[in-house]
Image (cartoon, rainbow, N blue to C red; front, side, top):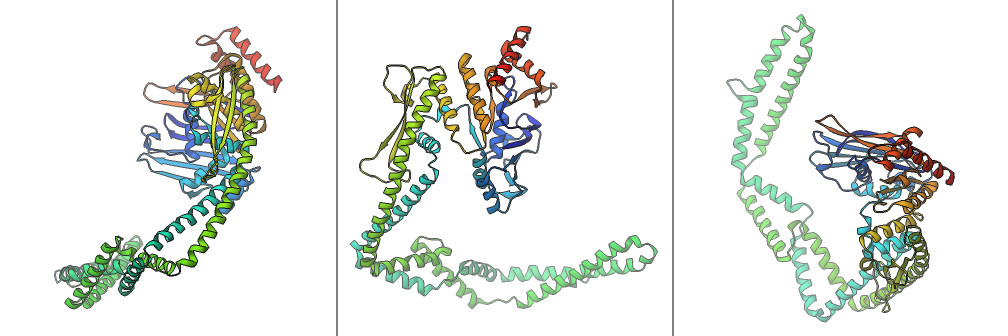
Length: 559
């Protein structure tokens, strides 16, 4: 579970710390106080993309830290062990974003890539955003949601892997069949190209070495002048070289060092500089002695470079890639020379890979059909509870009759809905109005989250657009989710807030010059006041307080 989150210099937050408990935690406050900003900060520490606008105005960097207890999360613990970041069941994620937009990520104090942070974060937290209903109409999102609900992750990965295996064999077979159509001509060309590149015999790193040597040979006189001048200034200048002046300085200090030990460090440093200057002068002298004009070698290097560049243009690869190009041509030549046997073997291997993919896809299809029935019934029931008593939800699994393979299996998944009794189900994207879609999305989220294996669920104002008895039902469902795991909910509804195990008020304070966000974990009396504010508006009355107390008592008794 998420134990603690700390946010510094993010958006309008200067610094907040929040200790979290098990169960349902709600965050409430006035519009614009920063409730959703806290969820955005949590998303960043879990691996979301960031930019410089995340940093609070006037700050050099934003920093978000989240601490998790992994005592009951073996999968995450294994991930940490594999990365050699195990910390005895505790995990600390940290994200730092600079004002220039650069980002760094850490897990248990060690630096990690953003992709690694995201992979770990996906095991720990599931975030449902307030605009999630906008993506619910997309087919890929619907397919992934069904597979998550059904627990198909391993089987989906197996299908994807078997598809990639079949696809690789299919492409290779097609390439060989194409090559067979013009085998003789292709063989002649390959033999010529291989001999040409083998004759070049370009070694790894040779091109870069030749460029460097050519540059040196073309500038021998310039190098000699610069090095000779440096050597003279360092060691031979009659008006006083660097080495001579350092020696004089050392001698001057040697004559008085007995008078004050405070000169020891300065004297030692000058002596070291004198030694290093002498060594540098000797290096320059040797460099000059070895430097010589060699027109013949310069011509050889230039000629070699010209050949390499000509062949790189001819083969349309960078000069450094000519070795890889040779290996590729040699492999193609070898395969083409024995293409008859290879084609037969590849056809058999492709057919086997296709059969394996079809079998895995068939198992996934059967699992999807079973999960679709269960998910349809559960979401339909949730819709009825959320004020759509005549609504009907259907997860349609349409399997390709032609057996066309894909990395996602043989099925098209589509969510169908009827919002009113007597109406046939139709595509979710075409039937539901904005308000209905928001409510259906909430039913889907709450239902699907029951099957989530992540220990922490976050809901960011997913209850927008509902109220009354429906809002109370939503609160109960969120509380039920919190009974089995940790749930965080940003809400503006008192019916939802009353169901919480922990209530946090988010407030925005300003001194007229700067604005900052604060978090306060509410006690019993403060919680009543906050609910009364949410119920009664500007003026809190005795009636609104009494109503707030009744709501809290009712939630406690029902829980």
